[in-house]
Every structure is written in C-alpha cells, then in structure tokens.
Length: 218
Ligand SMILES: O=c1cc[nH]c(=O)[nH]1
Image (cartoon, rainbow, N blue to C red):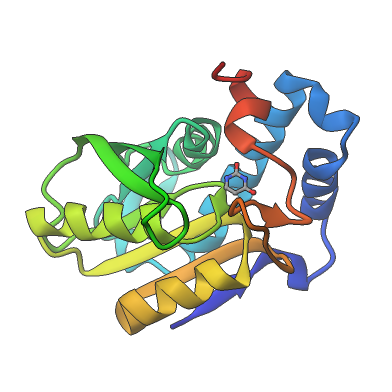
C-alpha cells in the first residue's frame, strides 16, 4: 500500500498543521476551518499527480497548446461532519469532480471492540464503477468508519483507484486500512502521529476536529 506523507518535506503546509494543533490558535474556528481547507487544496494537488491524464489540444487566440488533462473526473467523497472543510479544499482544486457524502457516527457499545459501533446512517454518492475515488476525512483514527464507508460505497460499482486522504493519522488506523484494503488503496497523509488513546483520540493529534470546526454537539 502506497503511503504519502506531506510533512516528510519542509513546506509551509506545516504552518497550517501547527496552527490547527496549537491549543490557543485552534480556538479561532474560522482559522481552523480555513487551515483544514488549505491543507485540502495542497493534498488535492498532490493526489492529482497520481491520477491518469490524456493529452488534449487547447486553441489559444494565437495557436494550439498540447496539455495533459485528467482522463476522467474523480469522485470526491467525505464523511460528515468534520470532513466538510477538507472536502471544500479538494473541490477548490478538483472543481469538476463528482461528490459523495457519508454520515458516520459512533454509538457507545461496551461489548464492541473499541467500546463503540460505527453507524453509517446516511450515504449519497454516484456509481463508482471505473472511477477514481478520493475519500477525504481529516482524522484517520481507528480507520473503522472510513473502511466501513468505503466497503459500503464500493458495493455500488468498482472504482479503478481508491485514495484515502487524511490530515492526521494514528499508526493503528493506517495499519487497519492496510490490513483491510491492502494494495487496493493509496493513503495520503499530512502527518502520522504517535498512537490512539483509550477513547480513540489521536495523540498528540489536535482534539475533536468536528467540534473545533463547528462547535460542540452538546
Ligand atoms: O483524535 C481524533 C480522532 C478522531 N476524530 C477526531 O476529531 N480527533
């Protein structure tokens, strides 16, 4: 399974990530959402390098230019609700992509493996057959909701490639995706952190991305 890590090179992307993690700066919700979006724009550019292209001819007022263009528009899928600003960043760059949305939430269950079940309550997406599927979710924690969402989605058509994109991942989540999806997908991360805590939060992570972007659910 191919894994790309944006923070393996020094770039200004690390500033956006540092602001998202900083316990004081992250309280500015508009800045937090905008930093997710900015990382979405940068990650969309990185993933775009891995998609198939065909050369097309563009007529300028003075001649013709041969330009490699996306062979097919990808499908961008996100998991509500923290995924929305990340998805917006992707849409700013891959602006002709089709979209899919999944509502996944954790329901406490003391008998379940991590103390909770994943409920996929809402799903709306196009037929994935032969398309490039890019599924974006800022936090790859256990990986369970992401893998469940993908498995449900690919029942409705077999994509020719699957790209999982996250801002911060836990090694446990990456290992779970690798175990369940293998070479079927590529994983694109801004950073991979140390571990998950007992509540399945990423350490050091940044806290609850959904609450920081949109306020507490309580
Ligand atoms: O640390 C985590 C893990 C999952 N979701 C979050 O928002 N934060």
